[in-house]
Length: 497
Image (cartoon, rainbow, N blue to C red; front, side, top):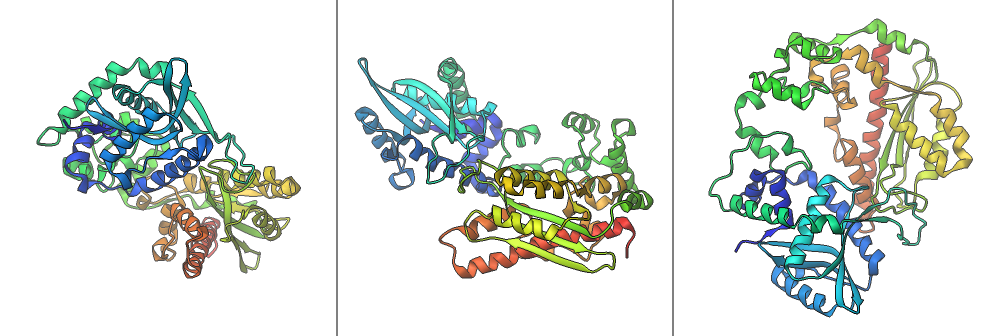
């Protein structure tokens, strides 16, 4: 009998074709978007073992192999004298591994509390299916479960330091719910096994299930194998900003796959602009309006961008899970004569960079002049968080926040080029306005997620001094380009050559 893993059953729940491909064509899978999620999950899982009992036994599947892992799990579950982490179960055509098993001894004998640990900050709908499968397989394997819970990250937790993570996880009891779903899970397993035995993949078109509840690793394979009308348009429907899935589906039912063919009465003013400029192939630019938007903001003008890192498991005292902690900023200053000065901050020591960054930021922002950003809510939130953490600097930070001017609304209202494909991100607008500046010329770090990964690599103990120096140069080049881009966009909107 083929035993399907819990992850395979959940894959079936998302899309039967995904399950078939997972089993028969795993070589087609693109897991690049899942690497970060796996790493975060492992970080939370490691700390969970400390929280529940670091003297428990970890079933190391990679070392033991599946059959020995199941055998060792069964023996420990019979013994019941200590917690078990990653205990394995195989029964009823399925297999699963439990994050945490806590023994409970009573007059009636040995039973277990099963806890599934998730790196999210709340319970998701798909978690309910996940834990229902987990409970079903463990119960079918003969394990007496007293309770079944899900532990997720508590984002209100403030790390006190010294590896004290008590309170990081919040448990939600699902015992009654999962017990009531045994029949439902049994049906999923039966249906999934039938799909797994098919000689060919089931015919299922791409759709919402490709990205909900997770991005499917086979999207890059499935989409090009569909009708070319849906995937090869120069201006696909997906390039219309905020064009709903229902409207896209309605257009496709009418054989409309190019946004230039969408009837006007389906479109907002912003979507109409995208359509019109895509039809003409020319840029829209309200130069007078853009200049008027910025005319009231004088000199010295400053241009600010932060790079931040988030940790599911906080590593610095006083920080919360998934809090955006700034480790770098770039600040360009320009005065009335056009003189441009650049200031920057980057801390790769591995210590909390927050206070030193705050002091440098306050110093270089000065006391006057607008501080331009792109999507100002982000920079404001970062500075507000710094003010909360360091009250001695709150007044100075609030004064900077009051001077922040957002260039993004100016771009959205006054400019659009067909090459943007419905996006007003900095990396979409900059090449249209200032093609001589390009993120493609950067090496190593060329976007925000790469910056975070590079920072985490740089502060890792195993990273060599030579590699850390390389990363330092890459991060400085990237962040400096972000604020230089703001300067060029500002000049363009102001009508300054």
